[in-house]
Length: 208
Image (tube, rainbow, N blue to C red; front, side, top):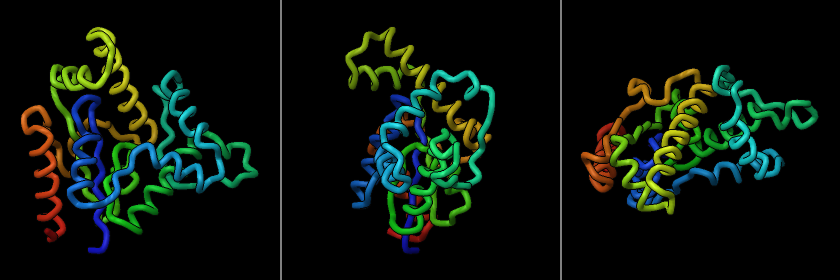
């Protein structure tokens, strides 16, 4: 198989992003996260700041929490009134994710990549989770918030990730049935999570 893509969804503080980067480093392949916003901006001609601004706008949107805009892949032309709509901006990100899956091996963190690439045979999806206490400890090591502030931030971030995922996919973010591999990073540690991902990749695709 020419390309193998690993998607990583993760709870805040579980170390999923770090684990994804460790896997990418071990395999000597790129790891994409927010870089996809820049690439989508270049592809569409829409300012990158608008992609980031839309993410922030959705966090405070009641409509976002109660409705759905399930991804179907349609891209709107520049002359459309909805060219810079939240749905079209997401679709441009999805276009980049699909292009990456068709051209190179890589790790993609977040961005609903597991759903967008769900029908691709060369993709494996991972969900990294951990108990609240572990996520809090990890997050406190990386941020200067008080414990109370961090608890609120973690709850808000995970709530948003779940709503964002449901809005664009119609699926539940934490439903293990949608992932190939679910890992509790508090029990395995980051290094062993990396090893488990690599082991599954080798067995699944007959490489290594």
